[in-house]
Length: 336
Image (cartoon, rainbow, N blue to C red; front, side):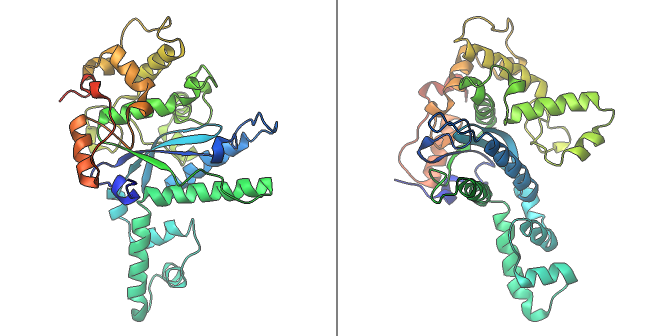
């Protein structure tokens, strides 16, 4: 039985979600199509640029992304705190970056005030837009509709560009988040497109590596932030310093882990394996083989939710349904 989207995506359960969308009939509509000989590589740039724009408008952070020839992955975080703090002016201003505004909202933004008889209508509009600005469904709608229109215009055709709206997967704990980000960032390497992380085009890992080198070469971090308006959700370490919002792992550990995992997968666990396990594995008490299997087969092990087995069962009971898909041996990765 199909479960409604509002039940699958609930920020009160978890703010982190893995979303996937695929081109219709799995055609190579964003890459080098072997059937008609045409190259649509530039459309992958369309998708990344649109993701960057939407991340600056919505109260949704991007943890990871990978845009492939016929599908893309996103790991998103709903920032409910930022969403709740939006002023009416901020909500209207953000919404007008994507859609034509209601005359009442435009008038309020321009004049700074509005007649008393229009206050109720304005309040309803602002509340609706504020809710949508923290919605992954609206984020994905804005992304998919624009790319489909541009592609159909370029191809001079009509019809569906995407197979459906999108598939979502709730990430219930830090282990699930890290595993999923690894899975997304390693997509080009697993597909045989490249053998290097810094050459994995249209991925978040490539963006993070380039930003890291840029920050080291730059004399001022402010220079980096001013030249790049779009920033991925940062790694803030495991100490929760100053309660800064971000991913609770050290970026250096993540780089070490993804490099080690990528080498193992690419060479079928033979050769090029680092002599020492990454520190993050030792800290979490995860064996190398268990981690490798979990990372390599992430999508096969889980359906629309990932996390500790107890949390997966609790999630399923809350949204409805009688069973959930998960790795039975997950206690190796998710100790209670």
